[in-house]
Length: 355
Image 1: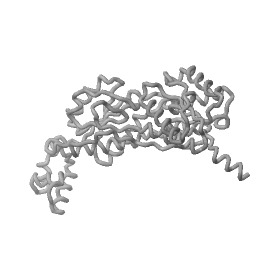
Image 2: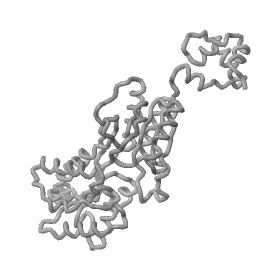
Image 3: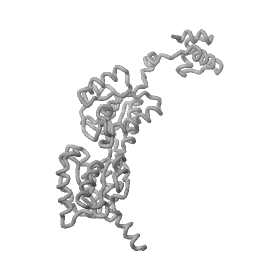
Image 4: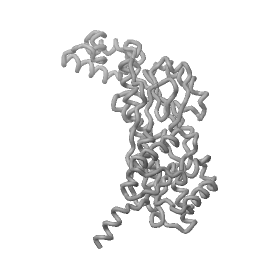
């Protein structure tokens, strides 16, 4: 294997000049640079990244801890892949910045995190991004304090820099759009209380209705679902029966996520109801394998996973360059995707008037 001294001899220059060409840390004449580059190509010389890393104290490596690999379902049409989408956003930024993303999977166990952190330290990772599968609170080991780290789709009690979806604003914007379309009896089927997003989206729902001077009606928020398992349809069916039997039933039902909306479609159709003619339905996530393939297509709110990944990557790169970091989580907004599962009363009335 050729060495830097072999290259220097072939090019007729010193090893220091070859080093300057490789590292681009000092001026070298064009003709000399071309001789060195030709010698490198002819000899098949490969620079030692390890040696360069020792000199610069920069490895060019960013570590990423995720459960996306081990926890991905064999049936992607049934489960979302949020952490994988976040990873894709991170990789886009790292590739553009010529950084190497070293990915380690938790194998579904938080007990593996300390070992993974230590492995990244041994490989001289400049920073680490931890990606969660859904918006939640986590607890990192004490060893995480010794290296820059950013949390994506999760947060902790130590104010570790984090990038989160703005669930509150997302639900608020959806309900605002529903109100603008003429809906004032708006129901909400909440996710289980164990989900951080459940309370945040409920707050967004309340903020939007309050701003429109729509009194809060607890009968329109009948229960907080205790199980998001698609095999457990009983409580969801009972919640829908409750809403439909109200003296003033809702004109639209907001579902906790798109998977819940998928099940609601089936239950309502088994009752002989049509969407949106009899009742409108909205979801949350913009999980396109569901939202775009349902008939009618589902109105929903985007969870901006790829944007979250890009933001997390940019944040860790900024932290690597400088010691300070933001004290508050970065909240990422998702767009409302308005589709045909919701009746727009204003548009409908205009068309009727024109006819």
